[in-house]
Image 1 (tube, rainbow, N blue to C red):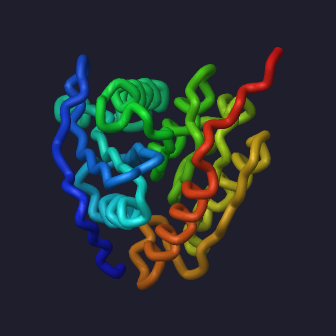
Image 2 (image 1 turned 135 degrees about the horizontal axis):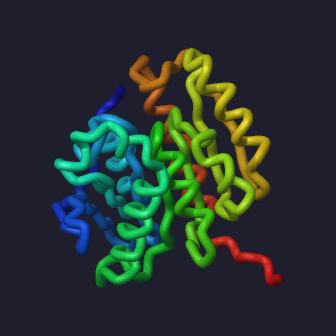
Length: 222
């Protein structure tokens, strides 16, 4: 994995009332903010997600990497797979960004990994979510099957070709998505995308998807 660096200052923020800790970086003239939903056993300090975030900031997008569970909650493994809880925390972070002076004018976007991808899809499916686009890396969108038909945000699913069972899970979720969507299987990549060049492919596809979808989708009138 090649290092991704940028000159944007990244600072720690606290999101109340749940006391979530995040890392916020806002490059000059940013138009969108990518909010990261991490997978099981990962968080705001994830080297892989920070690599992606640095590249997105280089492309002019703000980033918010936030721990969706507190340190106490992480001790209970059931919380890691509580998609509704994770989605509610992601929504909280999104509302925080919409109220924060530095980010309130930025279009919200989601980047989810593993169970975090399911949380992103559930959060985005809610009425008035206003999420412009979603990227899932090695995600478990199958854990959000009931919510998928209501997801309006253009959704990109990225899966490694060596991640056998997860490919099938993403294919089933892809079929359930009703809006604009794309499924890309990255050749030679495993579940964690640790292989040479794998994360660079993730960065390239994610950056393209986000920059092409900076307008929140309009919910059709009933």
